[in-house]
Length: 84
Figure 1 (cartoon, rainbow, N blue to C red):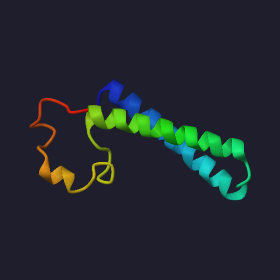
Figure 2 (cartoon, one colour):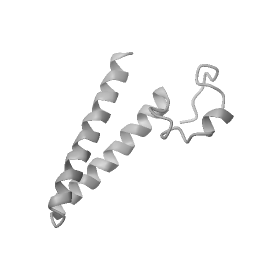
Figure 3 (cartoon, rainbow, N blue to C red):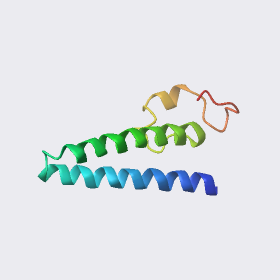
């Protein structure tokens, strides 16, 4: 794996961890509007990072790759271009 790919994956994992911790916190502090807003910001950031990662390196999981869509399109190593 390249350093750029590792760096992007690390950022994705970090943001996802923060999202999970905020989610757990909000389970017991559901009235904390500031934490809910922060969770929304992290969720937006995660989606941006995930889109960037998938455009450069492909889906991380089958859920991120829209399942049957993988079977209908050429495999990444066959396609030289990107439609991102």
